[in-house]
Amino acid sequence: MINDNEKFDVIVVGTGVAGLFTALSISGDLKTLIISKDKIENSDSYLAQGGICTLKEPSDFDSFMEDTLRAGRYENREETVRVMIENSPMIMKRLIEYGVEFDQKVDGSFEYTREGAHSTYRILHHKDVTGKEITNKLLNNVRSRDNITMCEYTKMLDVIIEDNTVKGIVILNEGELKCVYAKEVVLATGGIGGLFAHSTNFRHITGDSFALALRHNIELENINYIQIHPTTLYEENFTRKFLISESVRGEGAILLNKAGERFVDELLPRDVVTEAIRKQMEEDGRPYVMLSLRHIDDEEIHRHFPNIYRHCMEIGYDITKDDIPVTPAQHYLMGGIATDTYGRTSVKNLYAVGETACNGVHGANRLASNSLLESLVFSERAGWIITEEIGEVSLDTPEVDRSLYADPEAWDEANKNLVMEEIKRRDRDFYDKWCNS
Image 1 (cartoon, helix red, strand yellow):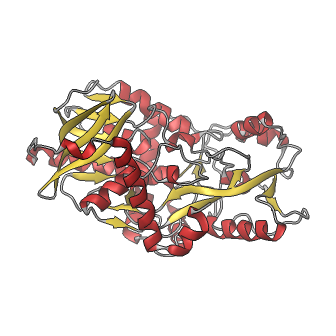
Image 2 (cartoon, helix red, strand yellow; image 1 turned 90 degrees about the vertical axis):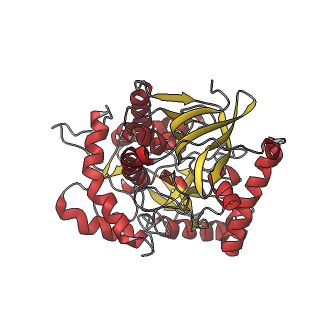
Image 3 (tube, one colour; image 1 turned 90 degrees about the horizontal axis):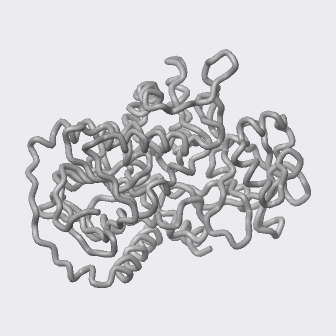
């Protein structure tokens, strides 16, 4: 329960790893509110399968940097990529302190995997449910903090901005319209998958922060840089697609056309593989290609991909024997609200982290398993700077014209249209290819 006109030091909108880690990185003396539009666990972070990149050893720095830049078509900000890579060992240490368990070899050392466009094995994982493992452990730690209040099924309708300074947010909580005020606000609402007919994202993740950015002239960057994941399980009549992790291909799975022939190097960057699949589907005249895991040892499949194995068995595919139909689907947004390396936006005291933010790490196309790392590195930095600077911020409670939200459904529909129209304005070719199907 949140009271109308209630005041906090910090409000965090979103309960994925970025929102949770920001809250954990903020001083325990600060009164913090975290809200989730849906059930607290229902963030896209929870769905992440493959793993999280890290700098395994100093000698891999240049290679890690080059892999990230090449996947991003060299449109990345090198300074931001450097910050991410340099901070990755510290992030892994902190995750382990929070109780996260990564898979290990028999000798107790970490087991690393690789995915498309990686030149070496540098990805830590927890079976094929890495996001679930990290999210659950962060949630456990957030719930233990006395200074943090979490509310689920609470929708942000608007941000309250006065003189280009954020003052709070407007929410729907328990069916009531309320204004909640804070010195600092952090947007961690994820991406835009709910706007697409076919996506790996939860349906309620509909780009709310981007619509509000368009309404309030908050700077957006590369909102049309949208990643289509090459391999999601083809199932008729399912809108949220089940992801077949890129690490499956990293461990040896191959893509086959209608004739049973391999047609692409499976470890090329995601955008390249996606386009090859799209063209192959057109040639084959069917809405999927086949993915074969028969080159992977059965024991390895059961150990490394138990969730994928279980889901496929439920719909009739034994991936140790059967090829499975896969198709591309919207997966991730590289663009978003423009930020610096501390999550600061163009509005004072307003921060954006995770998939909501565009700090330049990913460039035009994200390198596999950089998303969890990027979210954690820069949400921690946002938490640091908020703690450092909040003492100089006043808590104001300006009046809000509540009549704007008299019809929340109409407001929501207008927001969705704003985002899609902006994507179309920036990249009509992409819009026509992926947003109308």
